[in-house]
Length: 94
View 1 (cartoon, rainbow, N blue to C red):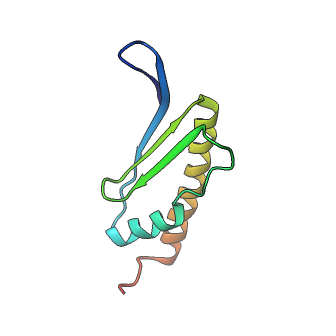
View 2: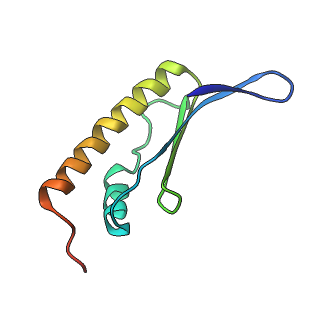
View 3: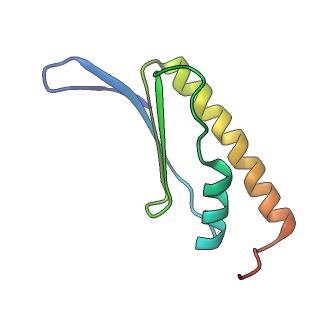
């Protein structure tokens, strides 16, 4: 997590990237559907993008505190999703 500078020295938003490998594409799809971001309660301040094809999650935020809270909450949800998938075993093919 770091503040990025533009070419003219002004600060851009803070960014955080996370790669999450899953055992299969099906499990990654299930996790994506469970973790897709809800609309943010406040206007602006943070942007979250989930991308299945690249296994990369990307956040940007105006303030470190907002980014920290958002990432922490997401990691709690990710942990719950992974524990649930582990408890039920591999998904059944459709």
